[in-house]
Length: 223
DNA sequence: ACCCAGGTGGCCC
DNA sequence: GGGCCACATGGG
Image 1: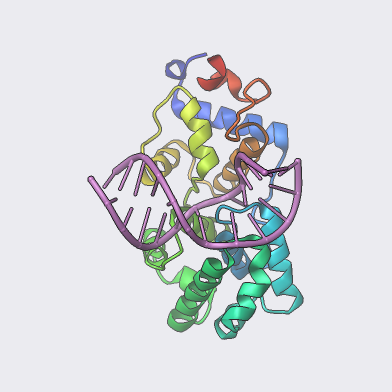
Image 2: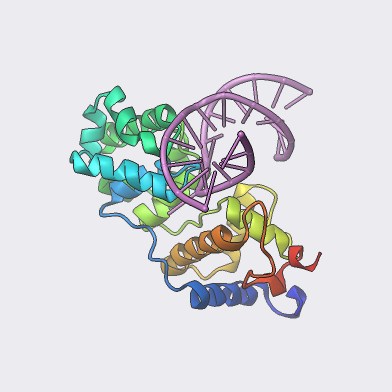
């Protein structure tokens, strides 16, 4: 099969269905609140989810997983609690910066999410040091139910192997997905989660293309 | 003892 | 706009 034979968006949905069928619904993001999604999004930067869970549980056990609590929490104490998630000094500062910003300017996340259009929310959060493109899109999509597609290292790695140019940088790749995918929250949420699951299993730095369920569409597997 | 994980900012060119 | 580096813990 060739990409040109059919519309690209049909192929993308084919991949989506195949992954959904293969791995099942991922139900991202696992969290009890919008704020927990934000904290998780920051803590999982370059870090396995297992380690993030430990950090989140530490905060939960102390009843500190709340916007206002984080703004009040002693810096050292915060660092100590999130230590398992790695880069803990940096991440403690990032959590503080994000929480202070939302708390001072909006009081709560709900108000922030309702304050303006998605692209404006995105630009605003990107101004906060430590909130980059993937983190902001995760926060908006999974925390705010905003229609914005998340690109991560696996997405780039996997789709670079497919015989099609999807973009050079984050913004371009994101725009490509948003052009080709139906404008549907559920699909955005599940597709990104499924891509991560696929990446974790078969497309690490040492890819296992023979086993990968989408390898029949992939350049890498033909080498 | 390696290698890597659901990135980001700073610095360089 | 891209390439390289520090940031740090825990699991394979």
